[in-house]
Image (cartoon, rainbow, N blue to C red; front, side, top):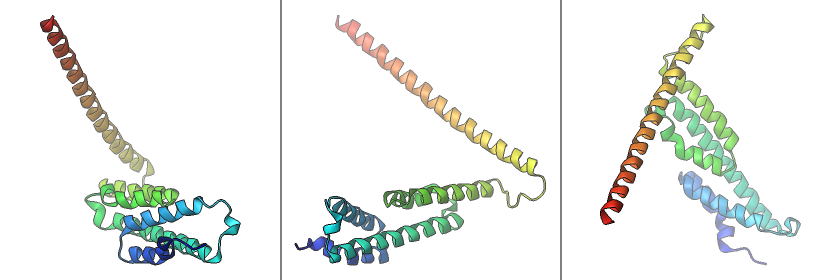
Amino acid sequence: LRLPQWLEAAPDELEEYILERHNKAAEELIRKVRQFEAQIWDPSSVSESLREVFEKVRKGAHALATRLLKEVRVGANRGSQVWGFRAQEQNFRLLIALGYGEAAARTFLSNRKKDSRRVLNVVDVGGDFSAYVQVLRAARLRFVLTQHLKLTRTRTQSQTQTQTQTQTQTQTQTQTQ
């Protein structure tokens, strides 16, 4: 039984994609190899060369995920201060697709904590912890109120649009009769 050409070349292609930072292409190749591996009925009957391919792809996936996690952590400290989550969204999506959802979630929460502290100009908790909690509570309350106002506005706009549409429909029906 001969391996498909794409599968034989998969470890080398994956390494090339990772080195050239073609993250999406690397993730697609990893997914394709994993799907091929999942379709094997009897894993014990797999040849040694195929096991090596699967192992190299697993190691490549781990290397890609490690690099993405590092970029997300470093990005939170440096370049993504203006854009925040949007700057790292693709990396988080790739991490989840690679099966590193828990690590991505931990990193995301860690980054949000750092961002919140930076926005609130909280450098060190230091002295009075209750004052720190009050600052956080006030910031959270402002955020919740802002989100509530936005939601209320969109609901009101959608309700007025549906009322206008029903009124125009009834008017056209009465005019046609």
